Image (cartoon, rainbow, N blue to C red):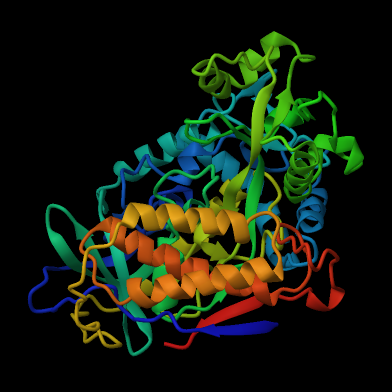
Amino acid sequence: MSRLTINPGRRYLVRFSPKRVPHMFTDVLIIGGGIAGTRAALEIDPSLSVIMVTKDKLTQSNSTYAQGGIAAVLDPLDDVAIHAADTIAAGKGLCDEDIVNMVVREAPERIRELILYGAEFDKENGEIALTREGGHTHRRVAHALGDATGREVMRAMIDAVRSRDSCEAWEKTFTIDLLTHEGRCVGALVWNEQHGKTIVWAKQVILATGGAGRLFRETTNPEIATADGHAIAFRAGALLRDMEFMQFHPTVLYIAGSARHLITEAVRGEDAHLIDCHGHRFMPDYHELKELAPRDVVSQAITEQMEKTQHPCVYLDLTHMEEALVAERFPNIRGVCAQFGLDLARDRIPVRPGAHYMIGGVALNKDAETTIDGLLAAGEVTASGLHGANRLGSNSLLEGLVFGRRAGQMASTRAHEIQDSFRALPVDGDWSPPEKDESAELDLTDLGNSLNSLMWRNVGIRRTGEGLSQATQQLDFWNRYVSQREFHTTQGWEFQNQLLVARLMAAAAQRRTESRGVHSRSDYPKTDPAQAQHLMIESSG
């Protein structure tokens, strides 16, 4: 196991005086309202008080936008051992086999729980309909509303959470930093427009903030995915792992002037073809599984084909498929395409890869425990060991369900062990940062666009030592004059979080001198068996 040590620059992003800030007390604080956070909330003993903090509305999360579905062995002809084998094969030597076996074994029961919460999955002959995605050797992906699985699942789970009197949801509330006392997580400093800064003290904290896709210019992620959880955990002293592994989804709708819309892998699972600008179906040239090769293979193949043709995209071709099937299975995508005058069943749909899922994150064990006492974590903010170096499609919602449940269980157990007389405590570190820089205000929009372009260009699908070195130099330059400022808006805090996580990602990518899964180095194109180990990043602050 290899280690990197990086100085986060500061412990807290803002100054705060405990005597001048309102205090709230709860048994469990959940930061994040996606599938991992809501599943955790539903597992906590109703006799305990829960505050769930989410920086946008509960309905806004990567989980809500998930299209494809949830992988689980529901077909009698399938087997959990095969699901595990597919997951491990996609992970290119870095999956934790015990974690993989645990997650895929629980998968069918987690699906049944969702049905009890009220989620309605698509049916075929009275049974849950299943589709196939890249890297899966069987049809095992359960889906809902055709291609809007996340929306339906999160509708049911949010309704279930809101029905619990013991759980209070704070929407539009930004978590600035975690609070620690003698190395133990004891709560968080949060902010919203109505109350300003508030200290929330908690017996147990669950981090479920999601991903980091907005670090890149091309991404499927909504605007909220700004790596906040990775950053606040690292500043608090949590160990991070596998930060070089960002998964790029192969097929993102590419239309100038529009937002980038994900086109689910299930489209290829139903036999859509990838063709280049000359009409050539190119995936057979790259892999025997063609369009159903693992995501890292397809993304890198598309990138190479665009370079060969000197064309800005490739195309999805569904014209050989039955129009009725396209309409039934992909109503959401069909509607998005129609907004731009494209018929999903008859036209060639322009696509290219985009940043999709952050595999690296806060290191944790099978019980969702991080390296900080009192801090649990689940979902995309973590590195659980399930995905290895490349995530198998539709294992992400599953991971959120499994680890969200375990985080909720552990938080309940631990919270019951702590007496209700817990009180406000002095917090670790120097919470009074350097004197505020009074120079001209920064153009954060320009800085954000520059960061996105740099990350896409130098830390994207294709990486080189030279490009990563250039990225590191630029990131260090921005860090010198951005990290020491004290901002008073979410845009400023988000940028500081993104800048920190970008530095961690670039440093990790520079250290891994091989190509493995989603980490592709043009200067080290081969996989090195000696580097089949995790890269840990610890704070020197």
